[in-house]
Amino acid sequence: MKFNTPWSLLAPLAVCALLAGWIALSAANLQTASFSLLVYGLANLIVYTDALDFILRLHVRRRHIATAPTEENRHLSIDLAAAFPAGSRQLVPVRPYAIIASIHNLEPLLDEFMDAFAAYRDKVWLISDGSTDATVLRLRHAGWRCFDDGVNRHKPGAIKRLLERVPPHIETLMVVDPDIRIRDRNGGSRIDFERFIRDFQQSGAAAVCPRVMIEPDGFLARFQAFEYALAFRIGRESLADYSITSGVSCYRRDALERALAEHTHSVYAEDLQNALILLSHGERIYYDGRLVVSTEGPGNVRRWFSQRVGWYYGLLKVYIERFSQVWRIARRTPFAMYHFVVYLGGLSLIVHPLKIVSAILLVLSFISGFDNLFLANIFPRNALINPGYFMAAIGSYLALGVFALFTVVPKQERAYIAPIVPLYLFYAITHIAPMTVGYANWIAVKLFGRRLYRDHYEPLPSASTTLPLEEKTSLMRRAS
Image 1 (cartoon, rainbow, N blue to C red):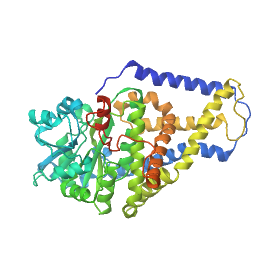
Image 2: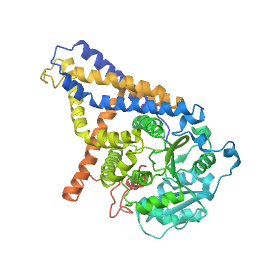
Image 3: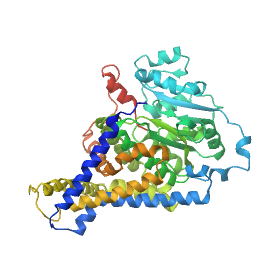
Image 4: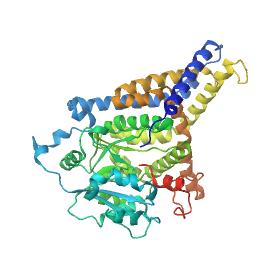
């Protein structure tokens, strides 16, 4: 984990102060301009869709808590206690389990990895996914269990190959990425790791997803920390037992084998593929936020952009390829219909062109505020360009962000996230760019057989020894 610097705190505070000044002065100098309710609604589309989705998920999440009002079940997407006979949780021992991972040229991060998983070393099974450095040699020398047959299959294929080596009596498998850290009670988890495993084994579900958080690491990490808190503590927690796995998830062995047997073995949206395969076969996947695992986010904007391009290319690719399974899952419950059809298919894919227009209008509105402030008269005064649109959006999004901060974000993380809440609208607008490139990449592949932008998920023919250390490390940290 990297330590915070004063700059990482001063930067968002300074930007917030400048934004507040811009709003105040711009409002004071605002002249009468044409105002269109239609344009206002379109410009605020990002705000409205995020707000309505948040409110709906919060309502569903509260219904889960109402049916299981204990403190423990507040961090689960299902009433886990109802699945166990009275007192059985304490009486049934943990059955054999393993922590498995695919690694590729991990040498730059090897010491960190061994320190993080030292407590679980006898449970860890590793497979080298075509490593060309000294990763395998060093792991074996240190006494770690690591297989290597010299083939780069990418994570899904490598995990499938590793399952052939794991003894058949091990029926529970925790799939991890090598850059994650399993946090104990002092690090944010409410239960220990074995309790997490034992509860999952007794639930009978196909998979369970713990809460993933971003480790503190500067300005950009604050935005991602807020994003991940919303995605897991309101997104997955609202999905009951048709949740979605992440790069760090625990599987029942036969369920994982079934998923990988039908998997395309593409690294794009690999976990979404697993979830769709299992859920379409009537399996259950739930979220258990009592266990927290942490990972480092992309350290700079370029890596963040590349990561998100890969995410949304994978979303469109998998959604179209497996739509029949999506529809089968959506018919399970009304909220499943909302999440898998309305949210993923509608708000994330079909409505995206309107979100591009919304982002453009907000950017123009923001810039025109400076034009109005300094009386430059560069921008025309018409219904399409009005500083009031951005003022309304930033005010609404700030109210939504503050509400989410105190209802969703854990208390111990609020001080870290709070400084960027007034700026989160900018992050949401910026997010439109990699989403658009990711979708455009899929269209370009279908039409021309090649991508417009090479993200770091795309396999490179010679990504082994010819790349600098920074690029090797970036390639290894495939986002979950």
